[in-house]
Length: 150
Image 1 (cartoon, rainbow, N blue to C red):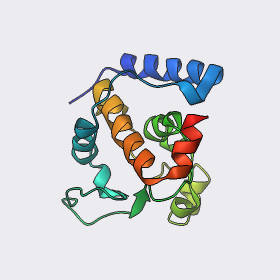
Image 2 (cartoon, rainbow, N blue to C red; image 1 turned 180 degrees about the vertical axis):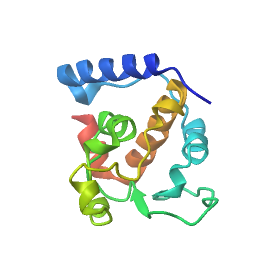
Image 3 (cartoon, rainbow, N blue to C red; image 1 turned 120 degrees about the horizontal axis):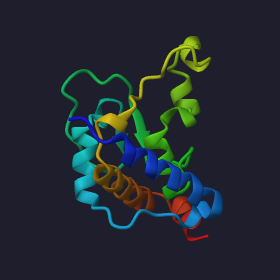
Image 4 (tube, rainbow, N blue to C red; image 1 turned 30 degrees about the horizontal axis):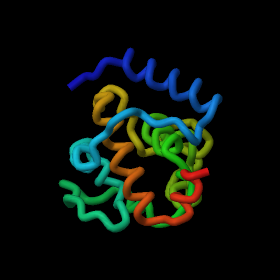
């Protein structure tokens, strides 16, 4: 199902502008954690990611990577970081992830594993997915909660 890139473009422009003004306070209104978990599974995030403390479906094929989210603070320190990681995954390559990439991927000659979801994910799924991950990070990591409360 193809999604409207205009929605993505508007959301990203707003996110960037809002992030420049005050990244720690930006949040999309709404978001359903349960629907976010469903989106995480349907968008096949489970092919490469696990979420600490959350039982998810098994991937339909062999797991490509085994990257754990919400188990420790790496890149994601705020809700805005969650949105950036979803909408622009090449923005950050963690040490855990970079060890799995080829030199060509690290040099930007070819795209890393994480697909561009802008054609497959609706704006509602993005908001729900962010709510789901924000909730898990908040429950699992006191450091995340402290950073969010700043």
